[in-house]
Image (tube, rainbow, N blue to C red):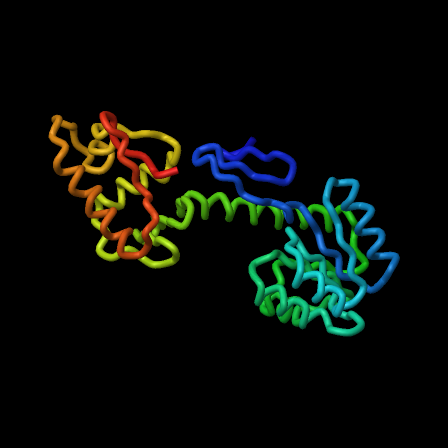
Length: 252
């Protein structure tokens, strides 16, 4: 367990929200290298470190695999039969932010600058020490996992609702709710942080207004009603459930 996440096999659970996150591609490496010996050496070493490796021996094969699968890291040779490595790198960047480590005999500063500007995350010159390659793979995976954790802290999601703390926006089914007030945002933030919990009106009032609850419920009830109206304008799905005699929770 790390940072509020519990890893079971290749499934990630967020302990705070109880959300199940698929992680089938976690710690999977795509090795794109036409030299059979080098490709085999990389796979053997990475297998021993616990990574799941897929081998490609041409740019064409790599493109096909990338269209059908996700990987934690791509180890990419540039001089490939079929589609050149530079084109494979473009494919990866068009698809997303999967880290790419270039493996090549080109060792001038200009060569390195060119591929790094082209979207590569790191660069290893042949001949290489296998320990260095493994270390660089570990660095890229750590960076990715750190980025995912930061994104998780910035965004809260529940079903088709997404709350962005940095941009102060709430979206439902990818449509931004209009004119969300500070208190409305705080109410939804509290509910999304703990989607299975029933909150009392006192808890919700003190979280959203940052002041002591004095027993008056109309203010909170009006804000809940306004949130529901804004959601209703986007979807018929109910997101906030009234728990009579207690307060509110997210609709399961």
